Structures are given as C-alpha cells and as structure tokens.
Amino acid sequence: MKKTLLLLALATACASAQLASSSLEQLKFAAVAGEPAAQDKLAVAYVLRSDPTNAEVWYRKAAQQGYAHSAGQLGHLLLNRSRLPAGLKPSDQGNLEQEALKWISLAANSGDKLGQADLACIYLDGKLAKQDLIEAYKWGELAGAGVQTGVAPILGLSARDTAGLKMNEHQIAEARKRAAEFVPRQSHKSDLPDPAWVQKIKLNGTSGTPGHRFAVINNKTFGQGDQLALKIGDKRVAVLCVEIRELSALVVFEGLEGTRELKMP
Image (cartoon, rainbow, N blue to C red):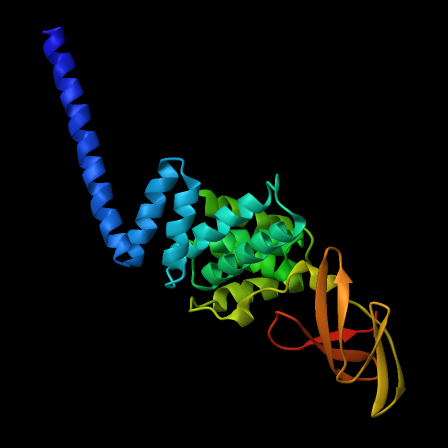
C-alpha cells in the first residue's frame, strides 16, 4: 500500500512538472512572438526560479512596449542591482542608476504601484534625484491608495509618512492635491526627475551690463551662448548658458530636456 502511494505521489509530481514545463514553453512562445503580457509573465516565472538575469531581459522587452508593470519591475531590479556595486565601475553604477530612475519614473506616471513607491523613496532620500518632500508624499500616497498588502504600499506609505514628518501643513495639502489630481498616462522624457548631480551645479554670481552679462557657474565664467564642461564628481557635464539675468541664469544640461534656471543663493 505504501509503495502504491509513493508511486502515485511520484507520478503526480512528474505530471505537475511536465504541465509547468509545457505552460512555460507556451508562455515563452507567446513572449518570443512579442506579446508584452506574455513577456511580463515570463519574467515573473524567471523571478520565481531565482533567475534575475533572464527576468530582466523579459521585463525590458515588455517595458519597451509600454507595459507599465514590467517597467516598474525592471526599474526595481536595476535599482537594487545599483545598490550592490561590487565589481561595477563608478560610471557603470551611475548609468545603472539613471536607467533605473528612467523606468521607475515612467512606470509611476503610468500608474504602476511599485514604480510609485520607488519614486517616493527616491524623492525622499535625494540621492538619485533632487530631494522633493512634496513629490515624495504624493507618490507614497498614490502607491498605498486602494492596496492592502504587498511591497509597494509598505514602501510608499512609509516614504509618505517620513516625508510628512518634515513638512508643514501647506506642503502636505499641496502633496495631497497633486495625488488627488493624478491621472495615469503614457510618460514622456520630460517626466523624468532631475538626477541628483543637478543639485551640485550652482550659480556663484553674475556681472556686467544688460546685453553683456557674465555668469560664474561652479567657478567657471560663462557668457551668453557659451557651452563649457563641468566636472561633477566622476562625471563631466556639458552646460550651455542660454540667458544671463541680473540674479539668475538659464542653462541647458547635456542629456536633459528643457532649460533650468540657476538662481543666486
């Protein structure tokens, strides 16, 4: 009798393994055919098999087609990998961080909860993007809205509450207003938060007369229309000075869209 039960158990296990293998093969067939939902599920299957390398491959394929869940998961994987920089050159770590920031931001704006939670943490700690407590509170609030369990609400609500302790009532009201007005949408490059190195570029002063002004930025002198390279840590950034005003300067940073206004401290 025991031998019969053992054989039945072995047969059941083998059948389950064959079924799982068959399902995985079908899923991979659809993923290879380019279906983003199948690519996302295949990535999840690799995560469950402790294979983050292949999970990253398939999350990326789906994310590149605008699949929000995959974008959030990909950003989360890259962010975690950037925090374990053993064997990584500083430049490679920086590239990894910026790619993580890109996917997290795109996922958050598309309504993905994990992306929103990670973005809340990023705005809170100010390491990968300029610290912004209002945005940290907003994204944390959104990550926890309507969700009871999981990593996203825990991370998001924790970031929201930590930010809230450092904010006044007007800032909290503004953050809640932004959260209430949020509508998921397809993101654009302009949605990406500024990288943290932007904070290290400072306007030291301006001089001259209207039409012939000069600006000193990070101890380098710019005329209007000048483009110079600034060394920020291990990174070199090309900065184009578009306009110089009495107490501020409009600049464009290499690799970032739009102009930024640098103001006198």
